[in-house]
Amino acid sequence: MKRSELLRSIDSILKTKCANCELKRQPGFGWPGGSRVSLVCNNDCLIGKRLQDYGDQLITNSLQRKGKSA
Figure 1 (cartoon, rainbow, N blue to C red):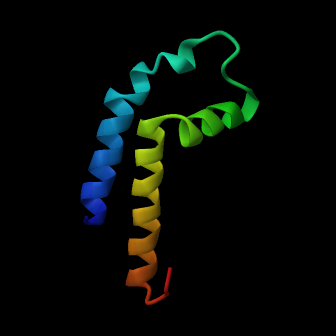
Figure 2: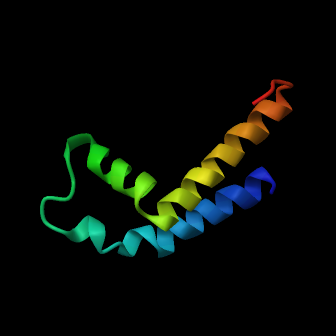
């Protein structure tokens, strides 16, 4: 996937799925710095895992452009 397509997908997911996340609305969910949000989103949430995959693809594409191996 191209960088622009990845960024559009990420933006769309954040606006549609993450903005309405019920988990983030629960009392006591957020910690200062968002570390608990990151833990739950990256480990337990399917949407968070998809976002993490897109981020990995962005990094890989960026390294390939610079001629470095991932």
